Image 1: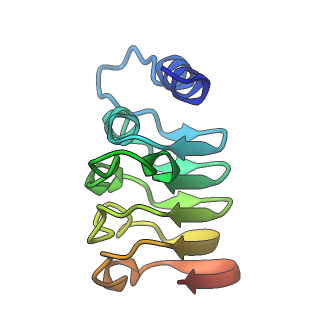
Image 2: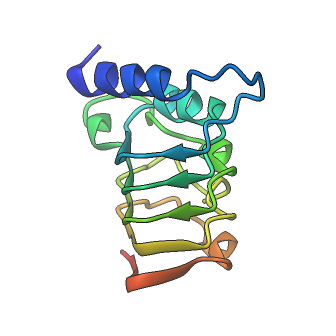
Length: 136
């Protein structure tokens, strides 16, 4: 397990400790970096509604692997706001952005190198407050 995965999982466990039994963590108060499908799935278990920071989803570690590392981000559908940027980069296995459809605010959204992405139509609610949408 690399350092980033360990750090992410440790912060997720600490941030998701809750005695109310509803499995909702509310607000994540730091940047979130998702590199592997297991990172996406673990983060999704918390049902965060907001990130006070940026959300980065990247498959940069994919180089040299046989299978894409992230294929499904639908578990992120509880998110409604992100105070920072959203960066989605090099996720070769991602075909849809289902999971981000409930996000209404962020500073900007960058989508780079997602060659199989069919469309960004699920982002109709999103109103970036910064430089907007960049799609390559």
